[in-house]
Image 1 (tube, rainbow, N blue to C red):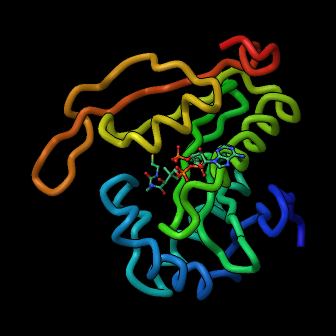
Image 2 (spheres, rainbow, N blue to C red; image 1 turned 90 degrees about the vertical axis):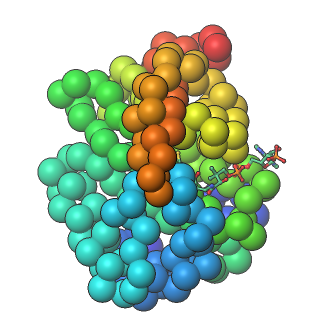
Length: 183
Ligand SMILES: CC(C)(COP(=O)(O)OP(=O)(O)OC[C@H]1O[C@@H](n2cnc3c(N)ncnc32)[C@H](O)[C@@H]1OP(=O)(O)O)[C@@H](O)C(=O)NCCC(=O)NCCS
């Protein structure tokens, strides 16, 4: 299988339809941890739901759009990263991520997202990458900052969750900023 070593024991690889059972098992460990912070459609409850997500990303990837990748640590699927959207025509993409609780605090997401930025900017020539998160998601905005993104604005009360509307931050980095290290 194609994969990229993030560091000893941790690798990034394509997360595909044939991983449905493994993905569902992982979501059992991650579900309540990620639910407030990710799109509702991503938080499925069983293998059929996991399969639906993987099939949807597979179809998007076939059209050169969104893509999904898993992070395996010591052989266990512990989270992942994705291009939430990807448009070569517009020269822009949005990156997203999630982890189960045991995998937090090790730099896995910063490293994996760095690989996605490099592929988008260097291999595909994209111009801009975005990051959207709930404004009170401090761990997520910390990743955006570590990736060299700038906070471009806040969409007020644009994130509905359990009867409340939360502010949503928009972060972004340009290819020129990442390549030169200019932050
Ligand atoms: C957002 C989320 C993925 C961030 O996970 P994370 O573990 O904080 O991020 P990273 O994997 O990049 O790890 C960074 C942490 O590892 C530490 N770290 C250790 N080695 C590191 C390294 N080589 N490089 C970078 N950070 C490293 C950092 O200091 C940081 O620790 P801290 O939180 O104590 O400051 C996670 O909190 C999560 O899944 N949340 C729920 C879902 C979610 O919010 N998804 C995003 C939606 S927008």
